[in-house]
Image 1 (cartoon, one colour):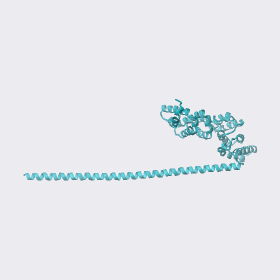
Image 2 (image 1 turned 90 degrees about the horizontal axis):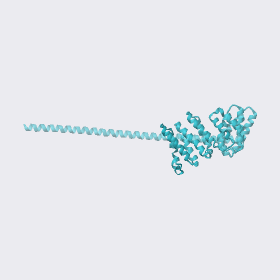
Image 3 (image 1 turned 120 degrees about the vertical axis):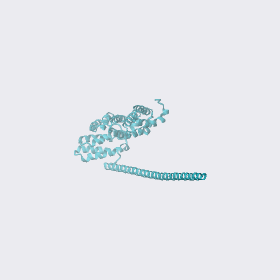
Image 4 (image 1 turned 135 degrees about the vertical axis):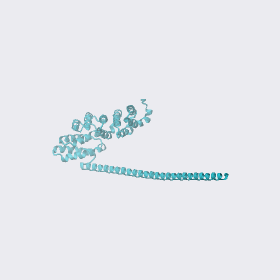
Length: 340
């Protein structure tokens, strides 16, 4: 509330804790946590968005508490309003992450996810697709409305340069449209892909989306029975191939297959490393448990010996007292006999 930049380095790291308390069972704590997280995001510098704020919000989306997820999505929408330039650059990562939350079982999370998705997509600076963004976001949450979004894009005249941010909004919908059974709808998607591919600013911008579009376009070229639609698909495929920086379609497919193979190998290595770490952790846990059991056995054996020694000592003490009493009786009897 003080709004001082001097306290920013000390307050912003508390965002994760504030979000975590949004799932508290106490309503007063939840309200205070929401106010705190809102104030922290308002205080944070825009340059902290990509390195601090967004990673914390993404981590909160893994929480089992639905209130924490909803609060994180609300804060993401708030960040989009405060730092649109930074959020626009992160759209390729943000859109896929937020889209996953749309299918959450809690309607509150779904509602927050839709609001956050619309907010982050509106940070895109491409004026050509601005009118179509609401339809695209609606199609992401309602697959049945995919063609409505494609129709909006068909009416778009692409003039501005198409960057990674713009592609991250359009490509998921276009990929879904290419999978529809209706050949005419496939053609519409091909037209949009060709138009936007001619204005891609660099191969690096479109590279992450090549595996999403190239194989589907190739299926349209090979499988659709209408020649004019196949020609449109081939033209779109050639334009996309050029945007990817490849000489022909086969080179693009080879590069995509190679990239997918590398991703699969990397994922396999990650799984193997995770399994090895888990195995090592199990072995260490078993060693600790065995050592604890050994120490317990040794402690029990030591206690047994101590108890035995104490018992023997007690028995010896009793026996000594009995001998002492017998000796005292004999001494008393002997004195009595002498007095007589």
